[in-house]
Length: 146
Image (cartoon, rainbow, N blue to C red):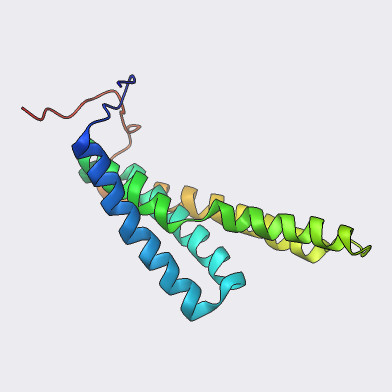
């Protein structure tokens, strides 16, 4: 299978899997040490900062590095399902119990999204400034593996 910017092969799958494994293990350690509620916020905000930096760093523009760090590691480290669970538990559980919906939980989830976006933009801008990489990262260049 081939898309415009990515060739799916065993090397690509291995890089994404290895990065995802590392990211997931690190997220799990956050969960154990910080507790579920705080770790969801921490990993998503920190993960967004990492992705922002990676997207501005020309050293990560090669396809293999991008697959390992940006797709695998960052994808395994961040947890959109954790945010979805927080949101769903704040709606479904109270409604089924006949209780009001928690506005504090919605504020918490909104805060995660806002801080994640600000973290991404800030890290991307800082990365561009420090690396001198003012051009957008090109995803049209394919890595030669021959």
